[in-house]
Image: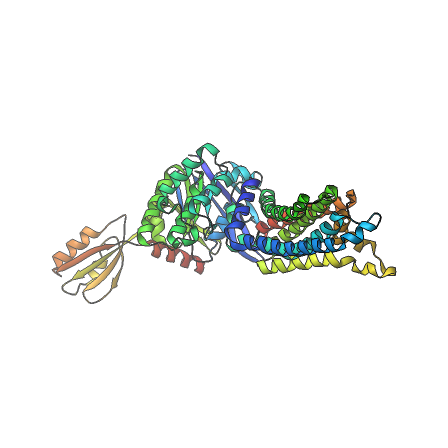
Length: 250
Length: 309
């Protein structure tokens, strides 16, 4: 049942120009950034060769690429998730789901899995770029994997917030704005830690950027992974609650 | 007869406003229940509660033996619902949409094609199956909405104003379809058009300001309204007082000099005596037409009575 809802969601995304446009623009911008990184590497290569233990091809190209992708997805995810529940409510199609023999959990998870399908596609397309380097050089595949995992966890967390905002907002634009607001806040929340004597451990823990960068560096620790898992579970549970409440009040 | 829906003491508040107040009724197999009410009377709220889209503030709903709150999946499996705005994914084609609905309602894989073909035929959608829903006219969209509600062959079909926006021919087709469905399902339909209830329903309920003020069979309703009206035209001016002495006549209205309306009891039908009286008096009978009392009159009198109470 979850898959039925998910596959419709996924296919509908591609019936409108929305998904195609976003995929194309993302790919174009990231390809440009990727090429500038490759350019930087080739110009640095002679100097690097003389240094002991210098950063390699993977270190120079992959983390900046995935870091930039994360920032762009921070902008794009709200646009993709804003319509999930909100649009159904506005088009009155939600009652089709509510009167069908499916539970609220099925509806929310179906929607989530459907939109994640598109996110996975985006990540796969991004990953293809560094993989293309395999033709002429060697990559640290472990580090590449860590970056993919980091981006994957980050994007699933973004999507979970977007889904929740779409549940509670009355209009897609409001959902997009609030998702963007929350994501940006979580992104910059530990900027205070730059000031040496004002470090806050709570803010540091909350910062989504810090956990992302930890995994990106190749250090996959359970603290960071569980941060993301907790994050996702919380917002999925909140979405289910909020959709359940829909029946109770109006 | 099996009871398909049992609603007990349904009450629903929106904030402090009470939209539905203590409504109880049952629906059996083979019945078509017409739910009548003015705008804002609580029809849609009641239907949303029946279909699990809205939780009642108080009361209990059982569908085909399953409690809607305790076993929502089992209860909803027996339910087909057309809300007041048909829930359509407009970017899909009719065929794709029906396929999605079939899967959503858990129609067995082997019978999906059958179910879709049968429903398309029933609702006259075969020719537009490949077209996008967004390009269909309002009438066809409404039919897709109905198709969606009956696709999985549910025991209970709830239709919220199914004939809104259709042309007269389509309305007739839909009414025929509803009567057909009523034979082996239980159907509830809401409307504010009274002739619709007369044409397609076996039972009628009138809801007014959230309260059920009438729950009757159509025949019972007509029986309850034990008055008939005759329109009479004569060549000469008739003597009203002498007509009033006839048994069974309750009142006489003068329309114009030569035309009167006689309200009479249906059980002691005095038509024969009236005709005889006029002819012997030599007033020159030109017209004697029974006027069917419409549901409109009944509805207005019922809700007016209620308002005065």
